[in-house]
Image (cartoon, rainbow, N blue to C red; front, side, top):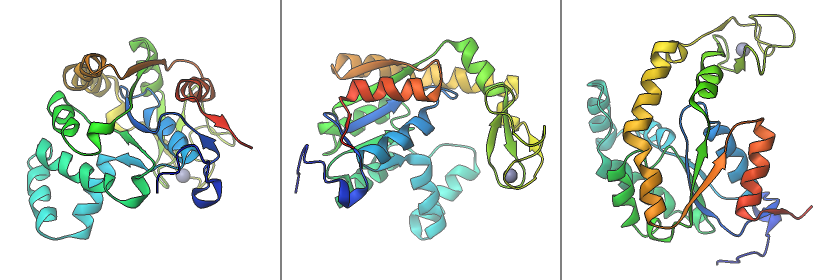
Length: 237
Ligand SMILES: [Zn+2]
């Protein structure tokens, strides 16, 4: 089943062959983690697994867990670590994750990382990649973010303004607004939460000797190149 390094481009549309393919991506809000993760996973032909999406799917599908999670989240609390880890473990036992996986937004805390390390998939984790970026740059990136009220597309005042008309979505003509989450006060709060809950993971994975650090400043293409180099991806085009 595991045709390591055989490419198998036809099967999944993967164009890259990577030396490392069981991955965790760690990065603060604004580090470009989500975008980089999606591109990289697609390129490697491995599933991009974001816990937020998984929990949303469960809630939408209904059932016992859905009701329980809904009740928990309605009180403004996160789904318990044991549940999150179980959800991820179940997802990673699906056949498409046999060649690897890229986890985005998980583990979110030390406790989750410890529980995950004890699972079958977690025990074979190859690399935790920390996207590192100066905090001033994060604030600039996040506070300039604009979101379309119509279709949800994102823009940036400085880095990715709409090409047709200021304040108007290129796709659908909707109004571009700054989300409450992207207001300076909220940004500082999000970064503080990251520092408290998630940053300790960097040390955890350093102790496990599987941590890699990537400079996440510069353009998305720059960061992508650095990730490819780190993972030993060669594009077999
Ligand atoms: Zn739009």
